[in-house]
Image (cartoon, rainbow, N blue to C red; front, side, top):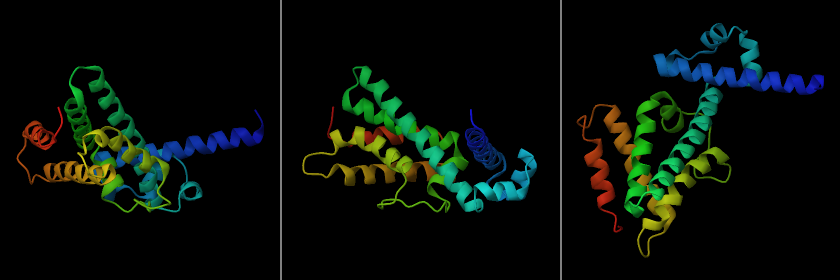
Length: 196
């Protein structure tokens, strides 16, 4: 391995450590606790080293959001594929997709905030939308395109379904919806689809 390759590998490892530490700190104490000073202390590097990777907290939030989007996409695809193997049909795939989405949001509140609530400097629904965000939407669309209904544009239907899931996740976490009703809400949402 050349010196250049080793330096690139070390840089990538430092970057992964910064993102993982920011994520851990945010999940433990919230995003307000994530500062470059605290990150530098936790990873035992100087603040200038952090700034050599990220210009500030906004870019760190963006990196966490991209990582989260990739994880969410993988979980959505796995849930849908798992349901496809069973005899549950399209309704079963959509139900599994909705559950996986809501479970992800509940298990990863700080990551979910980085993805959809905080400014990570990422473009959504634009030509320069990062691939990880596109993949997250594509993971929803892959299952939902078959249930959009006749004459309904699948992308638009996916946006509305996603907005419903996001609303459920956000309102539940904020204590605005009664606890323990997630299954009934998913059942109602999916039950309104004209599929079997």
